[in-house]
Image (cartoon, rainbow, N blue to C red):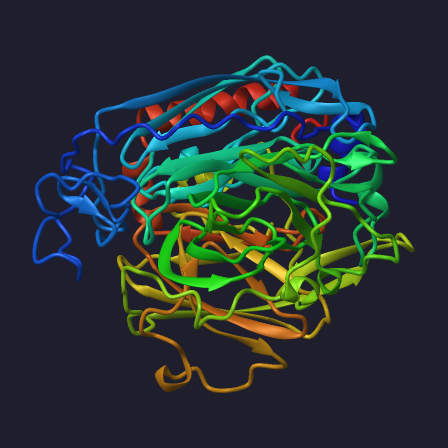
Length: 592
């Protein structure tokens, strides 16, 4: 078994829940922005002949605007505001007993909350989070899912890649600039901690591709276990263990106990909902009875709006949607909001789950549960991303000619145990080394050759295009997430990919781009990204049990630049955290 799980056995009491609904403040007005030193140049998008018009202010009738020099047409990979504002948070990670669905268990909390507090900032703000580990028996870390961290990989939070775990009693400060905008989440990236609820929402206010009146905040959807994850993970086989329930923003009902999550619509108004799948195994189909909605972004990427009545989210994915309230002249009533597990994403048994929230209309006198019926596409059971023709990025970008190509074959093999297995990529199982992360290796020895702790790809060219082909013959879907980059989805399909990779076979003109995409069962996924972000990055399946089982690969990007980018105070802090972890590590430096 991986040492990762051995450490889990030592801390089997670890657990986390999602309890209190995050409270999202009203959007603060964007500050006057300026182009800073870390913002290289001004993008002249297709919507404006030059800069946005003077007085371009974000509001219910002008969500495409933001502020002087910045709007929905700005190429956020090349330019972003530098507001001069710092959003600072002080967090303490601990364990407490909570009952998110009426079943009491010990869970992880941040400042006593689970889900944790919302990170809320404006596009261009600097975010600073001071994390104190009050756990007595385990390390921890925080990963800011999808955040680019340009020249700032040490803030990514991926244990064994960019940092050692934060030891009990130790502190670590994460600093990053919000160069992207939209909705995401943060979570522990140490072992399987986040599965027990060490998660929370990220909201970065910025422009949108459609107008709305009211921001209702995040809708976090997750599968939920009543047994702490470290007690069940080692016995997993090809199928992950059966969740006990699912939660919406940290709460739900079960066997007559608990509470449903509720939100309020105003008749005739347009409501922004920020959908996030924070689960560990399930894909969800989201819908609201009696309503269609407009989709305006995927992950961090604004898209050309399209209308649907349901949407699929695999683990780690986000969509922002705008739902128009029914006319004021219509008698106000209530509707079910549904987050339905998609059976084809995994071998769910015959157990039926009741994972529903309630949309109550302002002025409605109906206080009981809704009697509404599902939308037509409610039972659509395809475990797959939305159609590429729907996911069209608003800022149009082209994919360059490939200068590097990597081929990754995903498979699994049994261990000496009769009921366990390990995933591997190109025959290599990912074994995280918690005491010597990859970024530290590259700092200590720039000539380092990555060990076979995971399939490792070195990309040493500057601003070159790398193409990755990921494929599998197994009838199991995998949501792949890349740290440090949005990637462009060039092609995805079922069956073996045997064609020669040629431009005429791939989508190179403004294809969908995001940070999580589905590898279809027995299929392939071809992605591309530009090598513009020096550092060590992880690419992995976001099914927690698959990552725990070894399904990951590393990227070492522009290795020769790493000492210059991450030297000085950054290097000193990386070393300090690792020294403290090594003193504590109950496995004395073994893999964890």
